[in-house]
Image (cartoon, rainbow, N blue to C red; front, top):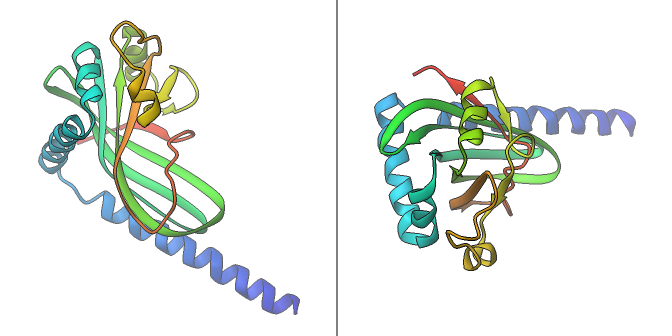
Length: 186
């Protein structure tokens, strides 16, 4: 019986690694020009769907946009995607978004997210560190429908606000806490 269980666990680990690596390879296929275009398009779509995002953009010092994150898992999982850092309308750098997870999970999904950096300190933190783990460093508030109703230019007190958008697939929920954002060459 223990041999059967060990064989099953080996299968689960191999399947999860295969799904995750395949998903990460798909997310890494974009050229710099594709990434620029997809990021700007995703941001415009976010502004149409969530008008408060456009309001935040007007006061943001910079915006990190990840238009296509691929997440997959079978007990062990991970997510990967690439994005840009915008200052005004200029793309100033490229970043990746990587997360790992384990637990009760099975399936795959895609989504995008944008992080509006509201303070100069938050922007400096991103630019100076070799990687930012969301949940450590600048304070990030994930904006959902409830939070969005209470945001105004006078109530902004956090370093950064994040919007998750375009979720599609067969997994329930998205969490960006613990995600590592690191600069990449393009």
